Length: 96
Image (cartoon, rainbow, N blue to C red; front, top):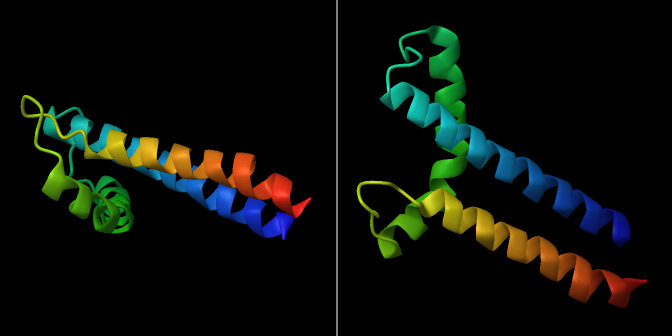
């Protein structure tokens, strides 16, 4: 059962990184640092949008914009850190 927890932890960690990269990419596109008409940038941005948006959409319904800044990725990252913590502090010791 411990390898399953490690797999879940790795998936959560990769998803956190996808959220961070997606947020940074959206800022770079918004400030015209990189061009979204570039095929590679568009492909990466579209992929990140497709994997992060389903989890961010419900959070955006409850968390308003803070001065025009979307903080839903931060809320989701904190929630994912909490889930990881629960997995390793509460569940993992019970399985050992």
